[in-house]
Length: 180
Image (cartoon, rainbow, N blue to C red; front, side, top):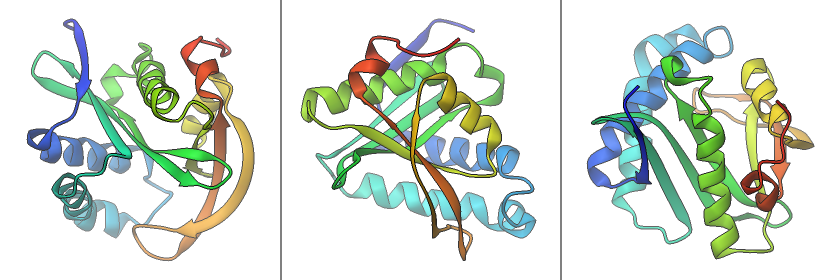
């Protein structure tokens, strides 16, 4: 690993983010969502989602990427004022498999928490994680995410499925209050 650089994403990052997002889903969602979706649809579907996001400016959204040299190896996308009780929504947190376990996910969470704290000091930060995505759930529990809700949501590949909502006080993430 070269020195990692965290920065705000720009429109030139769109396709790279979509590819990283789709490739992580192909790895981590195998057995959770239909193989047909992962094998034939996820690349185009994620590309459409990210191109739409980058085409529309949103002052309530922040996307941070982490680069190793010229390669994007992770990103986080956060939306302010998303939920009346839970506050800001962390919509995506992805790190390439070869870069996991080095604290990049935690640092991206801190980037999201800083954005929320700077823009909405009283807001919490929350996210949905698929209930079957046990590795992600372990990560969120290690960084002291509090389960606030379980629900069924619409899924990108169709139908509805169970998610768990984790919640944080952003200052706790920034201050590194998590388990090892």
